[in-house]
Structure formats: structure tokens, C-alpha cells
Length: 178
Length: 411
Image 1 (cartoon, each protein chain N blue to C red):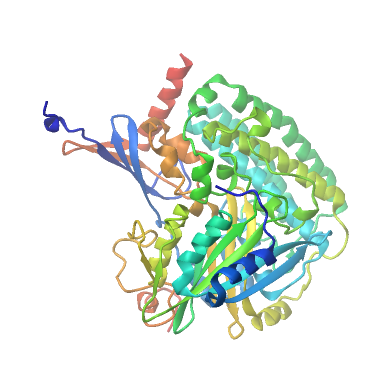
Image 2: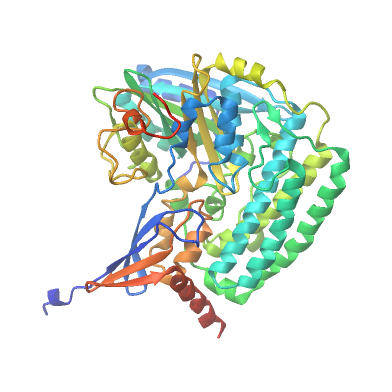
């Protein structure tokens, strides 16, 4: 399933831009050196349109089957940002590239399609995003809670910074004053 | 013939959430048909302590100590990944000597963790003498950790922009002596685990994870490498001083010629990695340049610099159990991180349990579950519900079943 061809960061960005044009809102390549020999590690940060997200992941899987480390999320006020941290090119010494694909969802309709169809290992992280950020993952194979207990109140999302955040749950917590 | 009257019944066994076989709570629900496991459901979150939320009220240096307390065994890799993420976001360059010292600490932690695991694995299949033998070796590794960091478990060695303690020339003889001790005992360990007939019978062909499943389910660390996937953050990217060192991927076929992805392969994998870690520490000691160990020794100055950072970063480190990844975002206004996301290796090794455990026997649950070295623990008792009668299988009972299976093989 993994193609043996190794991709360069520039090629990855170019092929995504050629394929999805304006759907790729922003793409930056970041390099960081480490050690005495100053060998570099490359990271790609890509902001994509949420409508094309699933197609982009499918395209990535066809390009080279990636490893999904985790998806992290930010509450940006009006929007919720999800960042999927992929890696490609693993298996060759110092050729791996971090590929961070971020997508912004409006709080009025925080919905995104599940990518479990292509990457079954995404299930736990998608379930976590549902319960912690109040994002709706469309087509998720199992939408039960993963980390939160069953008696945790509905409509409270621990990573939110607005009124749906966990503030009202910890007002009596020792040492935390309002 | 009408067969509907004789429908096959399977029953459900909950295992967990508290189980000393593993180190932290997790809840399994097994669907059992006789002795065979038909399906597995895993429930997590029993030790979710909201650490990421707690970071919102702390500055990055305070978060380091919070990160250290995520896990007692990975008390180096979480601060390491957090530091890498912060350094990535703030673009801090670390002195070369500190990069080598960081590798030494990382590899020492790997030796401690893998040897601890070897003892637990031996205990799971009923070889308690091996448990004591391995933990005796681990004790030396912990003593060495204490010698180098001042503490056995929560080491407080990592800091943003460098490392907190240097290794001076007069410390080298002690380190070399201990490394030689590990090497001489490594051969003994190899013989015990890899040549013993009963260990082979219990572990070969048990809990198989295919390469395809390992890739699809995004497994990490020794679990995925034992299935033949070459994925090791230390080799894949250049961070700390790993880019300068001479080493390569380890997969079990180096020793046996082929990859099966079973429990036996995961034992080989970890043993070979212990040897690799010893070699890496030796290389670091030889190649280590002199110089500073921290880029900014004044913490208030560093914090002031970090307060102005507006950006995000990702830090990845190969923990003993696999890739640990931290994501950090600063908004440039607050002292504490805007977002901090921690992903420990076991998070990705949960789903691979399902293909591993399906089709195995109840007596294999402890060793198969332990073979991924989960950093999250498990069960005190198992309740079997059958015909509305409730049987309780204590952890001792489950352990006894596992030992009995070993004894059966020995006859």
C-alpha cells in the first residue's frame, strides 16, 4: 500500500496546489536543523478548505499512505480549528516529513467528514475531537464517548473557551478561584 | 434441518478498569465463544486528569513539570516532546552539547522501560524468577539515572533551550561501568527470552499484528516495528543529536530473518532496542562536543521571550513505547500556552489490540495486552456473566489461567 517513491516537500505542496487549486488556502514549508551536523527536519503546514478535506485526505493516501499521529484542535473564537498531524516518507533515514493539515470549522456548524474510511486508525482521535471540542464528525463508524465518563454532562466540551467550556464544572475545585 | 433452535451463544467478559497486569486503568469488553475471543471493545479515559486544561494556568516552565507527571515511566519523553514543540514554535536553537546529553537521557529511559517491560512480560506468563532478574538489572539503570539526574523517576532534567545537568569527565567511569554491566547481562537476557522453549510456545504465533494492519491503524513504536514497519522517530527525522549518530531501524528480521508480528517478535524487538540504546549512549559519550548546556540560563528572561511568541509548533520524540507527539500554540498575549495537546504512544496502540486479541484465548489476554507495553493499566477482576449467573474472575485467577497454560506446554 505504501509506494516506494520518496516525495520532496516542494513536490507535495505543488501536487496539492495543482490538484486542489484555491482549496489549499495556505501552505508553508518550515525547516529546522539539529545536532552538530545540522541535519534538517521539514514540516509542512497546510490550511485547507473544509469542503475538500475528505478528498484531500484521499489524494494524500493515493500519493503515499501516511501515518496519522493525532488530530489536535483549537478554539479560535468564531471557529474551531482542527489540525491533523500526518507524517510521510518514514522508513528512510532522515527523509520523513511532518505534514500538518489544518481545517477551520464555523461554530455555527462544526461538521467535518470522517476519514476512517481511508485511515481506520483515525477513529480514536476523531472520537476525542467530538467529545472535547463539540465537533460533529460525519460518518464516524463509532460515535460513543472515548475518554469522558458516561455521566459527564452533555453539551460541555472541555477544550472550548466559550460558554460551552468546562468553567461551570470546576467552580468548586480546590484552589481555583473565579 | 432447522438449525435456528441451536443458536451459538457467546458471552461478554469485562476486563478492567483496574488490573495490575498493566500499569494504568483501561476497560476491555471481550466477546467470548468458549475460550476464543470473538470481539474486543476498549474503553479509555479512566485516568484522564485534564492535564492539558491545567496547562492553561501555567507558564511553559511550569508545564514542563506537569508534563513530567503524565506518566511515571515516560517522565523524560513528555517534557522532551513538549520542549521540542516549544522550541519549534519559538525557534530556539539548542547548544550542541545539550543535544547529546538529551539523547543520553532518552536512551537511558528506554533501557529502564524496556527492561521493566521484559520483567512484566515474564511475570504474565509465570516466570517470576525472570521478573526478579530483569528488575535487578533495571535497578542498576535507575541508580545510574539517579546519579545523572538526581532522581530515579521524576528527573526534572529537561528544560526549554537545553538540559539542566551536565555530565562531567569524572562521571564517565561510572557510566561506562554500568553500561558494561548491562551488556554482560544482555546476553543472559537474550538467552532466557529467545532460546527458551516455553517462552517460544507461549509467544510465537500469539497476538499477531500484520504489517497492513499496523500501517492502517497507525501503530507506533516497537509494536509497529515488530510487524515490519520501519517507523522510528529517532531515525526518521533529525532532532536532538540523533541525526549525528550512526544507527538504523531495528525490525525483528535482523535476528530471525523474517517478520511475523507476534508477541515473540515484540520481545525480540525490545531486546534488540536495549542493545541499540547502550550503543547510542556510548556513541554520545565519544562524540559529545564541549560547550554550554543551556541557551538561556535565566528563566525569567526565557519566559519573557516565550511570552512574545505567536505561533505553533509540534514536538515528536521516540519514547520507549513509540512516537510521542505534543502540539503547542502560543497566542502572543498570555504567558501560558493557548493550546497544548499531548498524544502518548499507547493512544495509537489501542486499536491494534483488536486484531491482536481476536481469535486468541482468555489465558492469552495478559501477555498479548502487555506485549504492546501499554502505558495505561488494567484489571483487578473479570466478571463473567453466563446464564444470568455472575462469576467473578479475580486478577489472580486470570494470572493463574495464564500460568497454567505455560505449565501445560512444559509437560
